Image 1 (tube, rainbow, N blue to C red):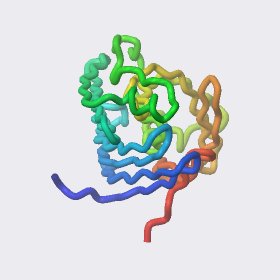
Image 2 (image 1 turned 180 degrees about the horizontal axis):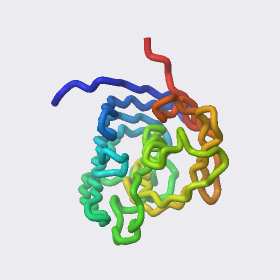
Image 3 (image 1 turned 45 degrees about the vertical axis):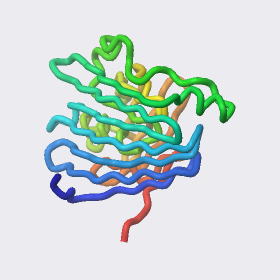
Image 4 (image 1 turned 45 degrees about the horizontal axis):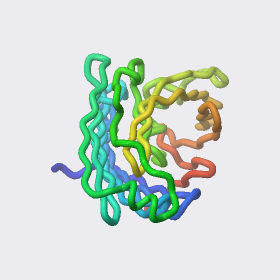
Length: 209
């Protein structure tokens, strides 16, 4: 496995947690990362993400694990059709129930055709995946104030359930991007490559020395 040229590290603001991504953005994006969080239960998430040169997603491999359970999903986009392959061991529902939380959905998605028209993945709690539509849509150079509505494959953590999500991205100029869903909105600050520096309420990028 070759070494990666760049590294990004975010500290979570909404919970105790962090994300470390090793990235290569010279021809689209290839990334390997690890995310840690304590809510709703402590878990570790490891992922591998690859896009096409135009930044549409080619595949996402994710494994999430905690005490007494592990789940994995591989999500691939080819010829505008999504395919999801899943595996699980242990009992995540029992762990969530013991911690006073509702049970989790099954990993993956029952009908991948619900994702038709989506070209981006959105890994829950990960600032890295916000970069995908920002770069794919060319928002760093887009006219400010013009809204771009997209459909995304939203991968929930820790369950790895995949749902279709309608999202809106709007350039605000000066390396600021507004991200919105039906119930949420945040003004992201990004660097000159479109990677998130500050995501209010979710995460802030650490300055690596």
